[in-house]
Image (cartoon, rainbow, N blue to C red; front, side):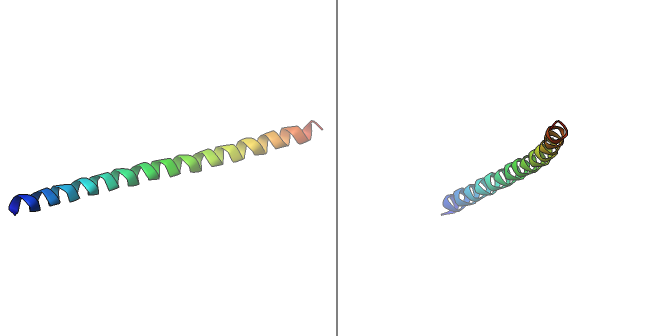
Length: 55
């Protein structure tokens, strides 16, 4: 009985570690997407300005 409880506890710790890693990866991806969106917004604004100046 004691070994089963230890195995279950080890399993829960592994699940917790995986969830923490997934949360960190999700935060990094979301921050990267936010930065990419801001960069594209600035780029498209500049391109639009150049195109309108050349009309």
